[in-house]
Length: 539
Image (cartoon, rainbow, N blue to C red; front, side):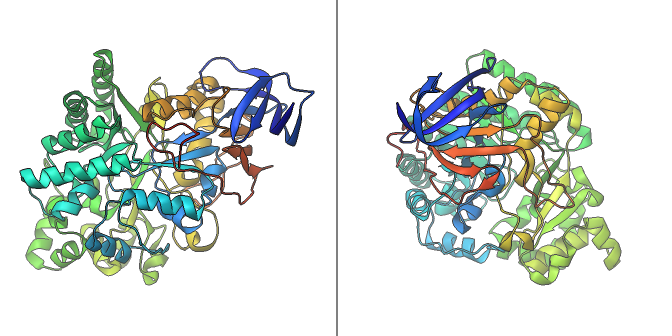
């Protein structure tokens, strides 16, 4: 029997969560065609997997690799952890775009530059496929993107005609291959959408078999209200729903995690398909926009910067940054200036500040940290990339134990070279999945390896509605990770994040090696995966 590739003697964790078994795997034309004792078979490529774990490739349920994929298509940081599918489009997607949105997206580019010569989500996905990518990619259509296309960055409800336009845009994006609709409700202008608007858009995605995923309206003081809103959208739109990076932000909110979990499990027990993903760190990465009230950001970045230079407005913003907020998620209060780390600037002259906390910079400048936060947005002409100390390790452990919890890095997928080194990043961009296998599986035994693999592979594939992905089984796409469970290791740190994880030996995407003996091959066999399509009809 002749195969393209023969994986020999590996310990197979097939994605089911059951105990592993030893067998050979034969691949042909990017598909798993045989599993068993294949020692007499021949193949163009033979991989010795003895003493190694063989599993389906991992699914990154929340990826911000879009710009990196446009830049070089390699997704090196994640491939070194076994990731074979990047799921992009959290709240904001690369289409639909109008000319103004394309201009703003171009103006806001930092170290990675690219030309925006598409307008629809489908055109973007086609461009990505033609450019070449090492991992597979799936995308949501962003509710924020749809809203901005019709309403700009205004804080108001759409009228009946405008809402109809928004629904039509969702329908178009779904027909172009989106896996669902997503929102990111702590940020402007996403936060200007009310629940009824989100239900209407989710209904449209549901007609096409999509799901609704959301960065909740609050992950802190109003976490429970945020969870209940998502469940209500799930129920009323009759659509499966996913909570992006479930967390309880701010020490005073850590105790709310138990009740949040209870709310989700109650909905699941009632038959509603509600799930969640998480990353494996107590620090989050976002921007200084999370430290300021949303009303000051209405109209977009230029208006935000302009308002911060008006003395009366600036005084009001500072007062709200230093106060408990009922109508916005006050990241400044949750972390404190000593817990806000600066990791990325657009302006090269400000890059020496990377790696310092907001408090350290304020001390150097002899100014109040809240004033310095506003100054930095003005000086950089950007939201400024920041890391916030928000979560508790105890809650992370509780979440990792949940059988319905999947995993997403909430980060990019970079290489430790070139343009990427101009800014720092969160270590999750290089280590989230290795951290799961090293810390929570091997060292602390919070979860077993078979169950961790299930929740990295088959479970997220099922949640996304992707066919023939996420399992080691005949007829499934040959997205495969081969690694040493005893050597898998996260190397990235907050002090030096640009370090590839170790222990992943081989990775195949659609049957083609993208990692061999721990080295990226440069191959780009990745495909754009579109909703409800099998591996035979993906493009």
